[in-house]
Length: 341
Image (cartoon, rainbow, N blue to C red; front, side):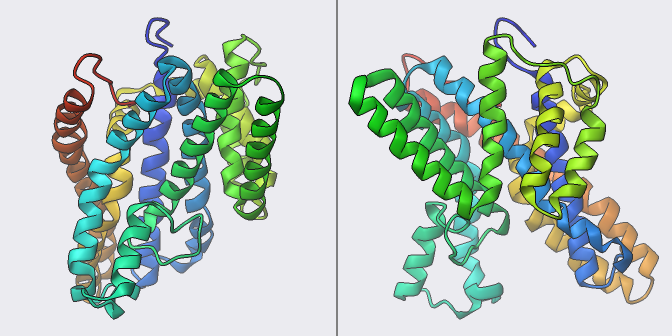
């Protein structure tokens, strides 16, 4: 870890690793749905949400670190909004402009001038589907619903710890803890944010235990156990994430490779955009598969990820990098914020 910036290259690479795993999960899902890929790989469909839980671990660590670093809830909120909304909002507008016309899923029943359209538009705009059982336009954005709620709760906990004392502080923290328990009880995947939060504070006080180089085996066990119940995977994912945070094991070294770091840099755009590019490639692959199934498989498996990575890189350069830089200068000209990588 760079001691000056506290930038953990292994965690950054882990974002790329998680993003590419989610992408390949959807490669299988799109292919299997259309009989392009092999049905005996059905167990893969259970792994998608598990890979997303790795993102929750990362967010738990980095968001806690960001709050401690900026020491300002306003700066934190601006940072989060600028980080999340530019790419998401573009895709959101595309979905609600063309979804009803294309007859995409549940959106095919929407009429542009209707109360249902307005409700769905704003519910998705504010990341309500996911935590709440509401129709979702961008399927991957269910995780952003969890992220947004975590940002709010983390910010309120930080503010309470810093600004209140005595009985009011105890009451507010108890209320926030009760809300968190309620959320985790109903949405158990939200518990994985706690892995990142815990690792941050334990590392801050130099108390991280040794994992005895068991990170990769622990990750495999966690992926298997997650299918039975998410909480069974929890302790094994702790072992893996602790090893990543420490940056001194083989798993951490793999995550620091240039490829993983590049994928980590474009991971947010890759995560949100790849369903759009993959759907286009899938439509071509399915047509080709009617003539030659192997070529159809090849198009989906090879061209799908390559196209997704290319479009995500363009999105990162134009939206996440250039546009974000402009927005940050506008909203914080004296003390520019650098959006978290």
